[in-house]
Image (cartoon, rainbow, N blue to C red; front, side, top):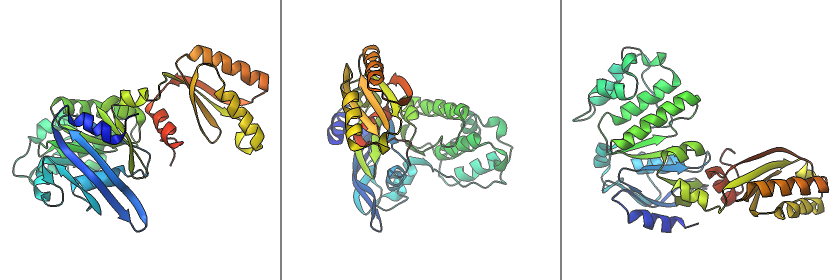
Length: 329
C-alpha cells in the first residue's frame, strides 16, 4: 500500500487542489485528538474521511471549516488560510454539522429565507428545496419533519450561499436505509454540479459508493489515503472467509497457536487477520480455500460458528491495518 504522502502527491498531479491540510494537530488536555493530519482535496471530488467514532474526523473537519482553532499545522480552502482569512473561507464553504440545531417552530421556507439573509447573495429557496425533495414540505414546521427530511434541510441550509466546498459530517447517521439512499443520490448530484464535497462517515459502504478518494483515519492519524478500489486491492485478495472460533480466547496458549497455524495453512490463503476470536482469511481462490478450511477444521475438531464468505471491503482494509473493526466503539 502506498503511504499517505505518496497518495497525496499522486492525487496532486491530476487536478487543482481546493483544500490543503498541512500537519493539523489538536489537543484536549493530555489527549491528542488529531495528530499531524495531512491531505489535499481536489476541486470537484467527493473526499471521504472514514474511520470509527473518535478517530478525529469531526475535529479535523471543524479545523478546516474554521470552527475550531488548531494547536498546530494549517489548512487552506480555495487559497484562503482558515485562521488568517476566516471571513473569506466562510464565503466559499457550506457546512452541515453532525448535529444541526434548528428553530422547530419555524416553517421550512422561513428558516431557509433566514439563512439566505445572512449572505450577500444566495440561491433561490424554492429551487433548493426542490433539489432536496422538500418542496412539498416548505410550509410545514421544522418539528414535523422526519429524520431524513431534517438532514436534507440541513444540507439545503449548507448550500444556500452556493458554496464551492460543502462539508457533510456523518450526514446519514441514524437514518433508515431508504433515507440514506436518498441522501446518497443528492450528494452524487451535487458532485455532478461541480461541488467539492468533504464527507465524514463510519459507514464503509457509504464511503465506497460516494467517494473518489478516502482518507482512512484512526486515533487522530491518517493511516491510508487512496481511491476505494486501490485501498481494497492493497489487500491483494478478492475474497474473504470469516468465522468465529468458539471459545478461542479462553483456550491455553498452545491450543490457540495450533488453531492459528491451522488457519494460516489453508490452501490459497494470502493473509490472515484476526480480532479477538474472529478470523478472516483472504484469498483469490475462494472455492479451494473454503474446501481446504472445512476439511482441516473437521479433521482437527475445530469448533467454529458464523462462517461466511464475501468480497473484500474497506472494513477489511481497516481491520488489516489496525486489528479492529470500523464498527467497534
